[in-house]
Image 1 (cartoon, helix red, strand yellow):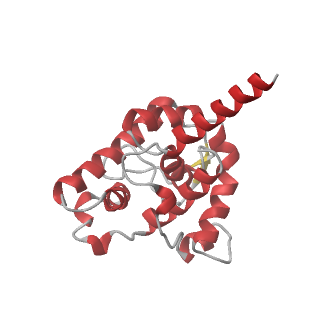
Image 2 (cartoon, rainbow, N blue to C red):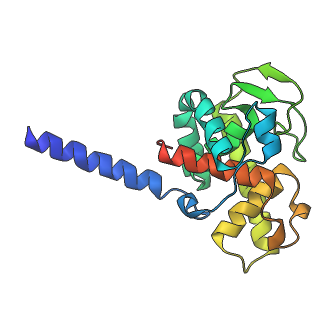
Image 3 (cartoon, helix red, strand yellow):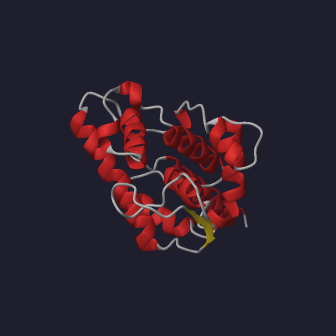
Length: 197
């Protein structure tokens, strides 16, 4: 019986260390972020903003995202992106697959724009969709890496998230790495990381 407990403990530690080391673009646990803007908090009926608002929105989306956790992990491994970051993007864009917000063109023709106009119930998250979104994010990160070769991995992720939400041309210097999309996604991602992603 004690051998079984030892094996289960080792398996849990292996799984924990595996998920905590995913991602080629910095350790999101170490990121500082102001979280969602007050505009985002207000849009979702919250009378507060910042990390607290991002975490509350992530908490609301968590049950929906848990259904897609295996798909998110596969995309994370394939593209070397922390699954918590992917979950943060999905939470921001679609409330974890619960709704698509204002379907439109994000410059690449595949994303749901984060500024909602109309909400439509959907179950649009599939392995190919998550893979496509993650691939676009990594393409944006690599564009930032080419343009700013002296930046660190944290700056690449921030720049990639801002470029994902807008366009690569939006990033002209390190002053542009604090866009609302990035700040909110990173705060949500940190929440998801603490809760098993």
